[in-house]
Length: 212
Image (cartoon, rainbow, N blue to C red):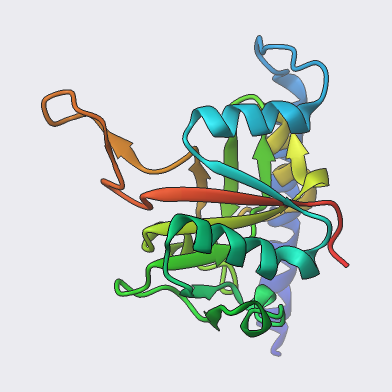
């Protein structure tokens, strides 16, 4: 690098540090507004809210049990066993559970999409999804059935808690943050509720106790 490049790089670094300090200072000066107190078992509350939103909630003892839990769910619902998943889930024993799962972004022909989730919100039964090169947003948006795998320790009480978690773990936020509260729905046409209008027709969440 030339002397000019070194000088400009140093200026950029100092500006970035200054901007980060300003943001931290702004957040510190602006405390949270009024919010409900979510007392008790937040996992139980997340399940309850998810069911009210027409999501299906299942449990697996560990991540390795997910394929057989999902296989049983798909068989019970009479759903296709072919689909796609995020790359981080590619090593699971899908084929042994009778599932044909490819690790790639979803296409319009795919009927099943399997993802993780950044966290979940007990207050509303909502999944918080972050976009990224390995966490393709369309895998949760295009297929008719979206299955999200979530560790129990990633459930937080409120929306404010979810944003705090993101700020603490990500200094630079992702390009997109998506919130999924049950299947896509609309009542725009004659006030008749229709599922799957703008996204998945069904949403299922598999809760796991550990990631080993």
